[in-house]
Length: 384
Ligand code: NIG
Ligand code: FE
Image (cartoon, rainbow, N blue to C red; front, side, top):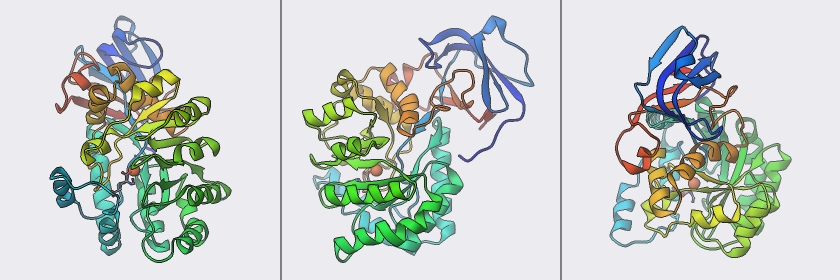
């Protein structure tokens, strides 16, 4: 999902329901994209002419999904681990080591092909921006190459050298991550992330790693409070991280902290689904005034789905979000979690990233779970 701008104009006409996030959805609408940007939005009867025209035939149009949390640079899969979980084994995060071994053994071309297959899969399901983390290399060379490959596919790249301690002394590994590995990763990354949880990194180590990342010009985000309650969410707010992700185990002080700051709570219901864990309560966060994003967490261990519609349906059914809230969180919420204002909405000037649905309303995304409802995707104004 690298830059590729449309050079001509394209009109999406005859839209039954258009969600721009500029007020309630419009009916009988049209949208003009010019040079990759939204140039005009209005009523279908006033639609201007354009080089190309797509007749939506009364279908709904939504902003492209912004998947702000994905781990796509890896080799192998862990289907057997999933089967063992479904037979009662708990998820611990320890399976990350299996993927690290497979990733280190893979060629650059294998990793590139797998990541790009997943980006294509996501795009077909309406995702027009995707964040991609490293984190299955865990050596200086393997983290740097993971980020180089990620940067070929997206501008939203995240250094997650602190995914797990691969071997040896944890303090030595933190020194490596904050030193030589960070220096090798920083040219290819926009963000820095840490898995702050049981069996991964402590609060103190996480704070040190994110602070080192900030000093190297990277912006912090964090895997927080997934496996148990811990200090991750509060560290996120303290460091003004763009996002605290997972947020499965929150106490009242965490919710208050998130509500008082600028940090987005990114919920990843695919992970609760695939690890058979209790879902976080999005309603509680929304009622406290927290900004909520939804993302896939696509990875071979805890959430092997690239489907934002699936996550949106789970959020509605299992996390007490309304369909409108879930759509906002999967688009504008993801954009907030990436500190972007040019995506996640379709107001004039936005990047012309959108999906035409095979449905009359966005409500069908949650109402018809598991059904392929993405008919056409425009990315920078260019049809898929
Ligand atoms: O976000 N929690 C840490 N990292 C991933 C899981 C990685 C894995 O199991 O391979 C996550 O769930
Ligand atoms: Fe993750």
